[in-house]
Length: 116
Image (cartoon, rainbow, N blue to C red; front, side, top):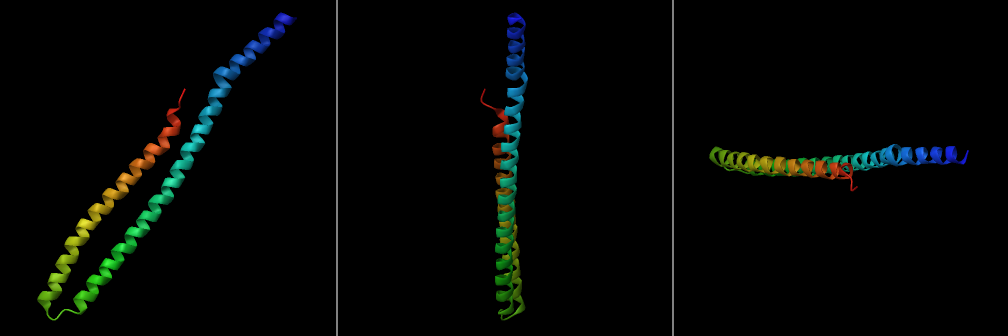
């Protein structure tokens, strides 16, 4: 009877060690990964809002400059300058968002890699 009890406990310990514990660790890693993704999504959203706000300020500044222009050539210069700067700003902003998303991906995958 004692042998049967010891065997049962050994089987139970093996199941816990080989199945239950790894499953718990995987679940914890998935939760940590999900939390990183959620946090990253919020960060990206705030960055996009900041960029939109900056772009709007730049657009209004260009409109003010165009409204104050003395002639059509000055308006065209203001518009050309704005378009050039906005193109550069857009590329920079896209690069910034891309880098942020890549970092979020790295941070989200880190808990899943485990340290066994």
